[in-house]
Length: 461
Ligand SMILES: [Zn+2]
Image 1 (cartoon, rainbow, N blue to C red):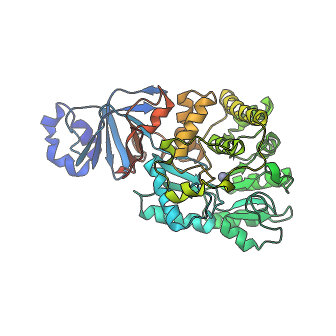
Image 2: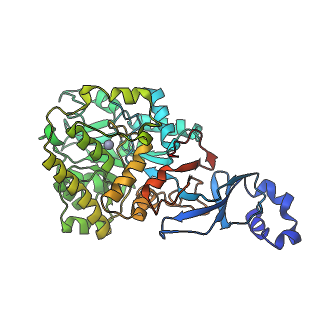
């Protein structure tokens, strides 16, 4: 009723209804006035709009009116700005992107850093301390600190074969490692005969949003490692689906993707290093298996192989000194470097896969793999957008992946990913049109999360 009255308060009705005092306290607390909206779904820019926000949600969007006709308590002038839904990163470990271990302070700083770069929602896919318990602790912290923290979804512990990635690879644990140590770090090792029913019951009990499995023989120099069998992958994905949980899979080769798609899993969390076949891409499109490319991760890994990274000032502007200093040492760089030819082939395969996935109609969600070295929270979403365009995507397809695509990956399209009445007021206001140049996503004027202004936004001038 209040809303109907507020709408009626435009124009002539103002006189008849005498709205100015009544509506002020009930209609909304913030009016974002006069900005144009980047219509991510339609791929166009709207005329100037007024967005009324109350209790963190968008209540109404109408054509811009010079007066504060809604009587909102506060008006935020957005004239000349391009309003984009808050960015979403669906492959975001919580940490600073350096090579040193992170404590709670580093992690809280990382959470704030997402917001400062306009990333208002993340999906944490286990690892890096992100176990079932920690995920719930972060959710609680973020619930209490909504202006310092993105909205968090996550998988809790990664599920992998005993001794496989990341337990016996990048974490370097021996085969007889105490499972409690592995759990603490953010993974669970399972065997072929272990009960999937028990695993899913534990995940439901832990209140996770999805399950992440590892379908991997290596990666790279770590191969061969044990890998979950096709049968086990299908059993996990099938039983999880019956229980209302979706399953996303770490992969690194196209043959892993085949197992994941055949097993009716819901998405892949990296681009494979070799080219996907037409039949795999067609089946991914048919079954709507999500494709999360993490091009940012591969870009950093390639630079690590080459032995040099040309770091942009925007990348490091919001990053902690601890993280940056940790990356200066020799230990970061690869010792046995790959040849330039091999790196070129690798880059071409991951770019081609993404381009063809879009052509085939595979759903794409933006994910960057933050907290791998050089993958800085928040900034990496902008880097991923730029790398997607470099890989051959249109600006609009890249922006879709970061907003409506990622929201639908999370099954949260009625909460986030678009600027529409009823959705959360997560808004990134840009000084220039991102459809003209994807680098314009860095020209941030302000960020709203749940209708609250984020302090210390990191922007290119
Ligand atoms: Zn990851």
